[in-house]
Length: 93
Image 1 (tube, helix red, strand yellow):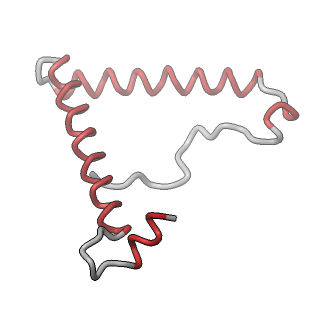
Image 2 (image 1 turned 120 degrees about the vertical axis):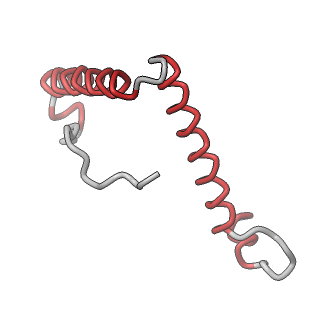
């Protein structure tokens, strides 16, 4: 409710919901950049090695999801099944 009121009262210098979302996006972008830097430092700046490791991790996690999906009953998940592919495109960062 406070966020809604803040978005309505922009003439008094209070932040708008869009401004709050932009701050959140900036923080997320900084966190992603820090994660990328951390990963590259673990591979001594070798982006190719970092990407190969990430692809290996993706393959491992896909197998884990496939195994988990086989073990889940329809009733337990109420019909939900994990997706192995993204249904929407990620935002460009």
